[in-house]
Amino acid sequence: MTTKNELYSHSRTESGQDFIMEICLDPFNARLRIDDYRGNVQTMHKRVLELAMENGFTKVFIKSRPEDWQTLLSFGYMLEGVFKRYFNGSDAYSMALYFTDERRTSEYWMQEDDILRQVLTLPPKPSDEPLAQGYSIRLATIEDAEQLAQLYGTVFQTYPTPMNDASYIKKVMLEGTIFYAVESNYRIISAASAEVNTLYNNAEMTDCATYPEHRKHGLMRHLIVALECELRSHNIYCAYSLARSLSFGMNAVFHQLGYEYTGRMTKNCNIFDKFEDMSLWVKDLSRQ
Image (cartoon, rainbow, N blue to C red):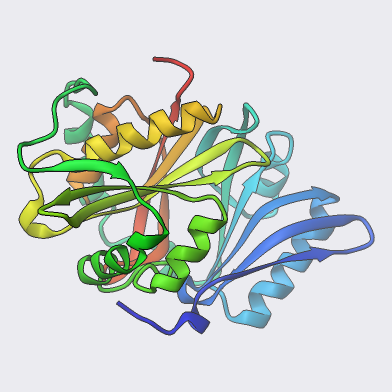
C-alpha cells in the first residue's frame, strides 16, 4: 500500500460572496469532493470547476441537497446514487462531473451488473448467528492501531486513505470513527469501521478487511452487525457503505444484512490496484 500521506486528501472551507462549501481535495483519488455547502449553487459550481482545473482532478463528487440535484444535472453533472436519509433524514444525491473519457468509462460495468444480479437473488441472513469457533469480536481501541495498520497494509495494495499508517488510525479514532475487530489467537485478523458524521447523524461503514486465510467464515457480517448496534446506542440511524462493485463478497454482506442498493459510482476511488467503481448501499437502522 502507498505510504506517502501527502498524496492523500485534505479538507478545507471555500467561500464566495454568496456561497460556502466544505471541500476535500483528494489527489490520491484525483477528485474533488464537496461534502457540504449552502448558498448559490451556480456560483459554487464555477468555483468547483476552477478548483478541479487547478489541481488536475478528473472527477468532482457532490453530495447534493434534494432541491439542488436537478440544477446540478443542468450543469452537466450525472446522478450516480442516493444516500437515503443522509441529512438528518433527508436524502443526499450523489452528483458526479467528469473531465476525461478514461475516468468516465468503466471497463467492468457489465461484469459488475452480473455480480449485482447474483447478489440481489441471495436470501437475507439472520444477524444473530454465532461467530465461528476460535474467533472473538470486540470494540477496537487506540492500542490496536499498529495491528490494524498491519492488516490494512497487507490486504490492500492501494487504499483511498492511509490506513496502513497507525498514526492516521489513531487520529480518526480520536475524531470519532468506531472500529470493531475480530481476533484469533489474540491477533486481529479482521476489522471494519463506522465513520460517524455527528452533524447530520449518519455513518459510513468502511475499512472492511480480513486476512485471506480467515475469509469464508462470515466475519465481516458480524463486524457490520456489531457496528450497527454501536451506532444505534448513539442514536445514529442512517448507515451507508461504498463497496467495490467487483467484490461479490462485500456486496453480498450488505444485501443480506438488509442494505438497499441505490447506485454505482464510476471509478470513484483508487483502491486495491486501480480506480474502481463503487456500489452504494444504505440502511435505516431504526427499522429492525
